[in-house]
Image 1 (cartoon, rainbow over the protein chains, first blue to last red):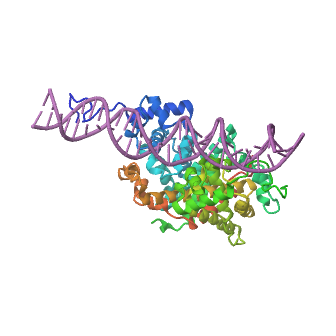
Image 2: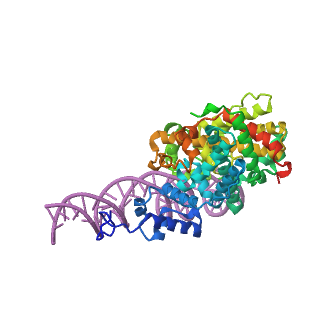
Image 3: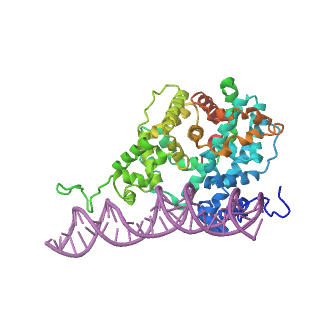
Amino acid sequence: MPQPNAPHGRIGRPPATSRRQILAAARRLIDRDGWEKLTIRRLAVEIGVGATTLYHHVQDKEDLLFLLITEYADQIPHPDLPTDPRERIIATATAIHDALADWPWAAEVLTADGFIARLGESALWLVETILAGAIDHGCTPEQAVHVFRNIWYYTVGEILVRAHSHRRRAGNERPADRGAFFSSLDESRMPHLAAVSDQWPTLAAQDTYPEGLRAFVDGLIAQATSAMPPGQGR
Amino acid sequence: MPQPNAPHGRIGRPPATSRRQILAAARRLIDRDGWEKLTIRRLAVEIGVGATTLYHHVQDKEDLLFLLITEYADQIPHPDLPTDPRERIIATATAIHDALADWPWAAEVLTADGFIARLGESALWLVETILAGAIDHGCTPEQAVHVFRNIWYYTVGEILVRAHSHRRRAGNERPADRGAFFSSLDESRMPHLAAVSDQWPTLAAQDTYPEGLRAFVDGLIAQATSAMPPGQGR
DNA sequence: GGGAATTTAGGAACGCGTTCCTAAATTCCC
DNA sequence: GGGAATTTAGGAACGCGTTCCTAAATTCCC
C-alpha cells in the first residue's frame, strides 16, 4: 500500500531502471542491429546505465530472452479457428510457426530448455487448442500430449533448419559445410543418399508448411489413436 | 612427399601440438569433469600449451565440438538390420537415439546447425539406411528425405527434452519453472491443458523410444506416400 | 533530526572465446 | 653458411556474461 507521501511505496533507494524499460530497450536493439548484437553491456549503454545494474532487474541474459519471448508470444494473433479439429490443430501450429519464423532466435532459446512454462499465460491457448483438437479426434489426453510434442519438434526443427540455411546464404558458410561429404559419396554404398545429394540443401531447407504439416498431423493422430497403448502416460 | 631427412615433410616450424592430441585431451576433460567444463582455456592447460595455440589446429570451439561429434559418430555400432524396411528404419533411428543419449551435448550442437555434413563419412549409413527403408516402403526420394527430417527432429527433440528435465532434477531448476503457469490455470478456459497439467513433467520427459517412434514412423510413411504430392521436392 | 534498515547503482574483477601480431623454429635456396 | 620463406607458438588485448562488494539513496523509527 503506497502512502501519499511515499513516492515508491516501499523502503530503499528508488529504482532508476525498470524491467519494462529494459525490455523496451532490448527490442529497440534487436530491431536496429539484429538479435546477435544484443548483449548485456550494449543494452546497458543503450539505457545509459552500468552493465551490472541490469542484474537487479533480470536474473540473467537467458531470463531476459525469455521475458522477450513472452512479450512476443503474447502478441501472437488468434487465428480463425475452423470447426474441424484437424484443421484447428493445423491453424494453431501454423500460428506457432509463423511467430517463430519472425524471431528465429526464439526457436533457439525455446529448444534448449523447457518450453511450456516459458510461453506466457496468454500463449497457453496454443497448447490448449492443439490438445483439444487431438482429443476431439479421438486421442486420450496422454496421446494428445504426444501429438503436441511432435508438432512442437516439427515446427521448431523447421525454423532452425531454415534459419541455418539462411545464415549460410548470408555468407557465413563454413568451408567444411560445402557438401564435401556429398561430393565424395560412394554411390555403390550409398545409392539412395547419392540420388538426393544434389537436391539435399533444397530439400533440407524446404518450407513444408503447411502441406507437410498436414500430412504429419494426420499421420500422428491416426497412429496415436490406433498404435499407441492408451495407458502409456505415467 | 616427405624427404628422409625432413622430419615433418614440410617447411616451417614443426607442430608441437596435433589435432589428434587436442581431441584426446578434450575427451579426457569431458569424461573427467563433464562437457560443461570443456573450455578452450582449460583444454590448453590440460595439454600444457597456450590457449591461442589451439586456434592453429581447430577453427574455433564449435569446430572442435563437431570434430568430437564426428569421432563419436564414427563409433556408433551398426545394428543388426532386419529385412523389413520399417524395422530397419526403427533400428537405425534407435541407434541415433542411443548415441545421442550418451552425449546430450551432441544433440544441442547438432540441432542448431546443419547436421548432415557434420556426421562424418562413416556415419552417413544412418541417413542412407533410413532413406532406403522409406523408399522400399514406397516413398519417392523426396518423400524419404521428408521422413528422415522428421525422424531427426523427433529424435533430437526427445534427447533435448530429457536432458532438460535431467538438468532440472540436478537442482539447477529456476524458480519460474516450477509449474507456476499450471497451478494458476483457468480450468474453464483451458480444460484440456488443466487435465494433463499434473502429469505434464512426466509426459514431457517420457521416454517414447522405441514404442512412440514406431507409431511415429508408421504414420510418417503412410502419410508421405498417400497425402504428400510426389513432385514436391524442388 | 539522526542512526538503522533497506533497496538500487555500479566499479572491479574473473574466466570465457577470439583476434591480432610478434617471436620462434624449421626448410629452401643461393 | 646465411638470408628468405614458411609454419607454429603464444602474449596482449577485446568484448562478453557474471559475481562480489561497496557506495548511494531512500524510508522507518526513536
